[in-house]
Image (tube, rainbow over all chains, first blue to last red):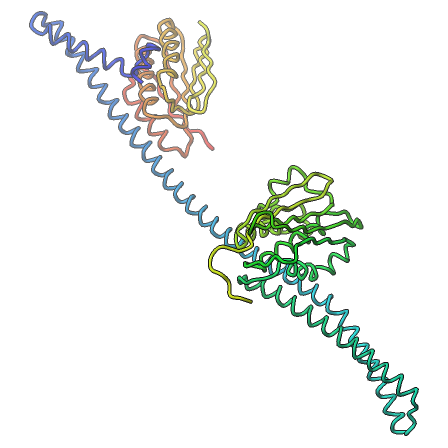
Length: 352
Length: 128
């Protein structure tokens, strides 16, 4: 500060410097004017004494300030440790919530399975019941030795029709169970395997059909049939489920139905581009750059956790090794674009 | 002479020198990067005022919550200036305000008053 002091004509140590100059001058005059020198030396001693007292005070000032600083630093370190601890707990809680959210959507999938299997099982059951009735009736006629040709022919027709229906519907049910089982296993195990993309998208969408149908939406899937993937189908299924559930919950007004579409292409060799779109109300501009943030929701009050798209983001950038971006124009629907490789990096998966 | 009013900044105190009534005050925090820039004008005004204050009553209120070493030195210089003026017959009262729970600021006040022979120095604790 000495240099700047010269500019303003102010110097904290002005007095000390003046005394020092006087002392130097006095030393030169020491031989000649003794009374002057004595008075000068006395003043010098007094000023020096004052200066020393000030120095002492300043040292105490400095010590106290350093002591304060040390306490503040200690407090800061404590607070920092507390904040880090809180952050760790928060991350753990967030992880738990993400897992809970995944399980909850698996629960929705199980609900969809039950609903979907209900139809073929119901048909098979009523056919079997009808066949049992017809058989009991035939037995009665047989025991009474009263079977006519017509009765027998009618029974044969009934048996043929019902058994075919039973077989067809049981096959349908078995097929549904097989694909749901695969989706459920993929979703819970997160294991890598080979799968056909078109078939897998269809299986996932089948499990969501009851919810989509209930909302009155149409679904269009456009995917080349020959895209064999090697990666994590569970992650993909979860991503599509979250997109569809978001469209159903957020995309449309009550009673309004729309078109959901999934369009897949191999945009470059080994690179998949999947576009999920709806034609609903879209995402507000002010929300768009926050939708992938954890806990961001516009529906907190009505059960939204704000984790759906956060999970999507983590799955796409994690297991799928890709990127996801949103492309929304207020009132013209929502479009999510996923880019990910056909083969996840790392070791080959075993043949299915 | 013209009163001196300087608003507080984040690192320098509020200056309120009312020369007509002889009431002066410094209030706030003082840890400027350039102590000369902050205290230069204060000293210039104070020196002029005290040089011309014969027969006046001066009351100087210090209400500081934090200051650095340079500011402490400047404060001591200021007290010397005030003590010298008091020695010349000007009635000078210094009130050193500190928060009742701030021991450090109280001790600073006690320290600073040690060398004063002519000034009336009051330690004033302020509650909460």
